[in-house]
Image (cartoon, rainbow, N blue to C red; front, side, top):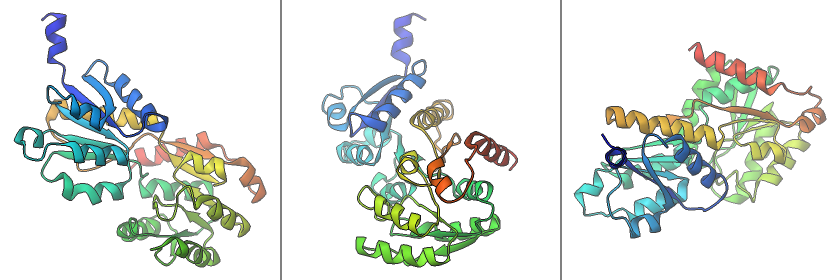
Length: 297
């Protein structure tokens, strides 16, 4: 087979972006590099890819919530061929994935979600903060559905779950958090956009800091801002997991229902730890312990 025919045989993958920079572009570029020998990968905004689409892609990957929504809006609705093209969403919260399933319809669909498994987050608390037994959460509309699972996982780790009143409007965040802080030893931040966003984060961090209750988050940016600890997956780790899902699809033509990222990183804010009277954390050792724990399951 010639090089030309091999190139023509490579599956065409569209990677849809909504933002042309930052973590979204970094993830897309890492994904393109990971698939360099597997597929013909084209990275662009949804409007650009669909406007000059030419040949249909064999698979579409979206990076971020806005990119997923943009692709769903641009996909031809009355073309049977387009309705069969698999869609992989990445860098999206699990709550968004569940909310979009009705729009996706019967199309082959999966997502590599941003959320860390609840068991991993609770294992981090158990390992790094062994004296913290009561885990507090401030729920919102998108995290309500996971509270029963969180309760089960919390008990499995020998911990107690403290749930504040559900937040349905921004003015309800502080009262719910105050109720949680009265009883909790640690607050676990859930990826609930109504509660945790750029406009609320500093006030939440300041409130937990004054109460001397550490916040365990899902983002390294939150740790830089003042959270004590976080377990998260980097853009390159997200890209590698997404590339593996795509390779599995090429080999088996099947997509899993939802994918949690296997690779992760633990980060800590030593300044916040010192202010709480805690020694510095060996984050590499903690991460290694969590990996061993997951490997043993």
